[in-house]
Image 1 (cartoon, rainbow, N blue to C red):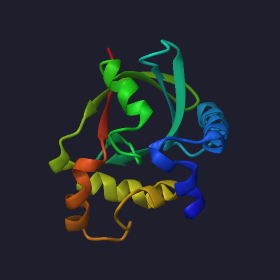
Image 2: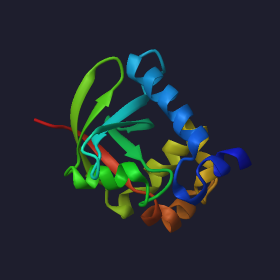
Image 3: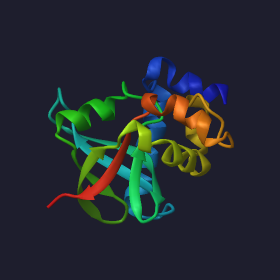
Length: 152
């Protein structure tokens, strides 16, 4: 677990994490990985280039969500907000989406479900995957959650 924190020290991926993220993004894009492993593509707010990032998608009651395990300061979160929430999800096919920021009051069950299927996120979040929802309520404002909508 300490290696995962080292790879994202300061909330940013180091060179090793960037390399591994690139491999994961390519794998997720092909559709070979489980269907909850996706690649998010968003236009960089500074470079204007498309940036790809592997993420774990959580599905609850038919609604899809993406979570930032590194919190509000994650680069993909800044880029997504600068792009007005518009992005592309890839998992075997491309899907143009609009990601909407979920209200912190609605986040606890989503965060709990996310930690159940995203073991790589566990070292970065200040709550245990088996904690009661009341513990997730305490940290919900610290971890952005985005509802996935189709972009028409």
